[in-house]
Image 1 (tube, one colour):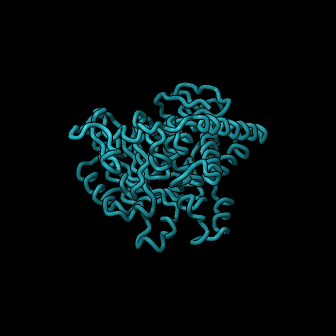
Image 2 (cartoon, rainbow, N blue to C red):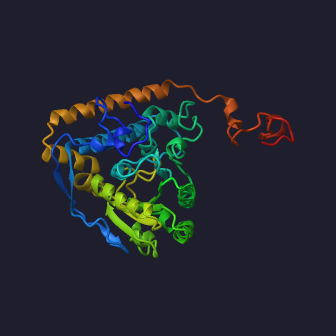
Image 3 (cartoon, rainbow, N blue to C red):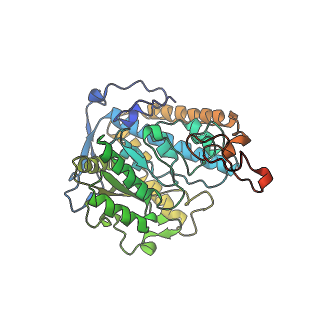
Length: 399
């Protein structure tokens, strides 16, 4: 897999599928074949706005192929992480994203690298969509020095500031006010960027969200508050945890839209609508994506004590985002089954190769434990150990 680092509106130009040719410039991207119509099974819901106002969208084979192959790559990456965790190659907290891929991929298809993203701890696929490689992600998961956070952050703390991805946050809801801060920075610098602050339905009840929304509305910040509603906050269903589970209306004084989070094109159109609102200077926006996670809340949660296997299987059968896009390719675009199978096989092999690279990487040196506490840190800075004899640096020397 080659992961390009150039800034581009198209997600496809950031994450190339195995064997894919370089895409045409943005003005000509996805124009090689006739378009076909994709109907939206679930209508958009709008609050204090008109919403996208469409029941279908036109798409091309090339366009859907890139969206599908990226989602498939994310699915394989997360399923492989599941196996590595069970083999004790990955330790600690690990929250997987399989089932929710359409949100990440559809969102990225509507924005560019100049826009900022900040999310919670289910962040592996966002690290990939912002331009990192699976090898770097797996290395971080396995605590290797070649990981995106030098092996010191792990699953919950992916980060890629150069491409405007700010994590990866382990505290529930901590990213919400930070997202408003990123939006403030975009407005202050006048760079035309929009900040997307993602959180789950469980974190939608955090008080800091409403504080951040109030400030964003007062200052008309280009911030999109994105609720990835996967139906469960840890083991608590939305019906049991939220008195008003229509999260797209939670902004109260700002517009919102709810879209099918299992349809990558519906997500893309919703994000296009929200970003146009923010870029116009009209202030913040709320998006809710109705999605679903197949795994439990984390790898320590089997995910079947508060829901049964029949429910999970039913969603896989009727709403799976990867299979949905695959069906568009075979049924509407006429892509041969053999061609899709070849891409799937190549993707699985590439993921295996990336895992091998990560496994071969070394662990961080012991000296790294006292590094990166501050930017530009004084190497003689005093860092107290568990007792004074284990301390580092010179007593009295600060950063």
